[in-house]
Image (cartoon, rainbow, N blue to C red; front, side):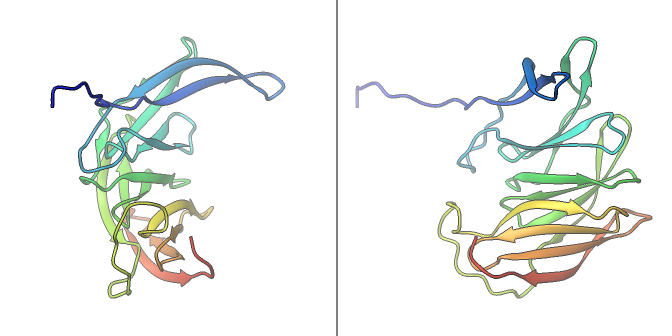
Length: 207
């Protein structure tokens, strides 16, 4: 209409590297890795959501729910720099990878999602490359859900934190919102890394 307007090209989203002081306090910010992905189907742009170390301590995974990618970073300690180990893994479109865990003893990696209510299993190599093994729904087939009308908290089921048992045999995945407050439990095949749901435990309360 002839007037000026503003358009957001992307929101800054970063993975930050801080030093730790000898007394355990947080020191200087020494490096920043900026994520700038954007997709029209999601209300956010890049949104790194979790950072989890692999059991060896050589590198860590970062799930970016805003651009459907999983990044693997290592730290160059001499240069005090974050280093992307390989091209980020492009997860299923509009799945929004959110939280992740590593198997404690085998090269298996697992991630849940915000929009796709499922958990995926992967194999990874020393370079941080991910190879998909399988994906399993977190909510049992036929489970009744209300109609999803929006994307604000509580309007749809969403997956929150996840944990893996010390022996790597079981994954515990938290789901909440819109009538699906529960813990979904998966068993891990110790030979292949494939997962299978073995329990869906409802919990009291909402969200």
